[in-house]
Image (cartoon, rainbow, N blue to C red):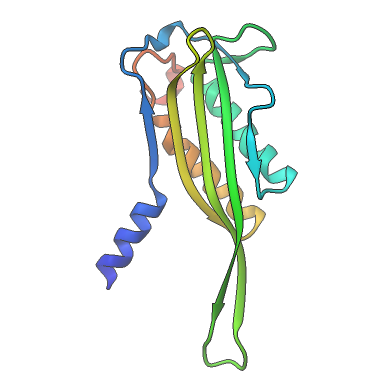
Length: 160
């Protein structure tokens, strides 16, 4: 039972990254969000804004700079969440209910010249409050953006 629980925690907490191994990532220096193409479902405005600010922070750590026109990369963010209600029956009278949100955070980096996805990362997330959202998003984005392709310009303070 303990082994099974450990496997479930590991699989649910993992992040997934894919990138085009033929792409020369050293030529990318700027990015912009793909206008009108971000899919955000099931989150409050503040929750989605926090996730996007964290994505920005990580892209800047890759030495990419945001621009308004002619970016080297387009960023597409897909946040697809729904409410989850768990009901527990225990020794107390009546069932106990807990509410949370669960869903998927996905970031796609697209080369605007070819319209090809050159980097894609995603993870699944469940949170019940703002503190959990901030803790889990930061932790998972840190893990996801550490899986960077060769050629990305990292600041020397990153330890790489």
